[in-house]
Length: 238
Image (tube, rainbow, N blue to C red; front, side):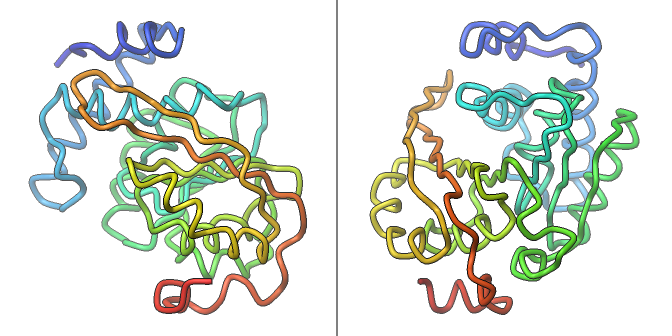
C-alpha cells in the first residue's frame, strides 16, 4: 500500500521532503494501524488517506513551530496509537522520545510499530500522566512535552507542565475551542509555572475545521503538590 498524498502535502505545508525510507515507514505504520484496529480500538480514523492527513500530517505539523535537534528529550503524553510522537520520530530520528500511555493495548501497539520500524531511542511507558509527573524519572526531565486530544486545557496543563524542564515548552494540539480553553487555563498556568506564548493555526487538506497548536513556555518550577493524584485534575480542574 503506497502513500496517497502525504509526501506532497508534507512538502507543501511543512517544506518537508520525505525520503524513500521514511515513506516506507509511514506505509508500514498505516498498514499496522488498520490491521490492529480490527482487533483493538485504537482510532476511529481507518481510511488510508484520512490516516495520512489526520494522523500523520497533523502530527508532523508540530514542525511548523518546533525544531527537534539532536538528543532533544521529547515526551508525548496520552500517546494513544503513537500520535504525534511516532511520526515525528520517523522524520527526526535523532530525538529521544518517550511515549506515555495509560492503556496497555495501546502501548502494545506502539511497541509493535517501534519494533517493526526498528526505531531506536524510544521509551514506551504504560503510566498515567499524574503518576509520571511525580516520578523523578519523568518529572521536569523533558525539553518538549506534546499532547493531542487528551483533555481540556485546565486539566491538560496539570499533566504536561510537571514533566517539562524550566525553559522547555509544551505544545497542545487542539481544535476550534483552543482560544477559549486557553482563557480558562490562566489560573492553572500561573500555579504550575507555565506561560502561554502563542496560538498557531494549522489548515490540513480535506479537513474543514482549523487545528491549533497551543504553545506554552515553562518559566518556573512546578510546585511539588502538582500533579495531584490520578483522577483529581479531571474532577477538580485548577
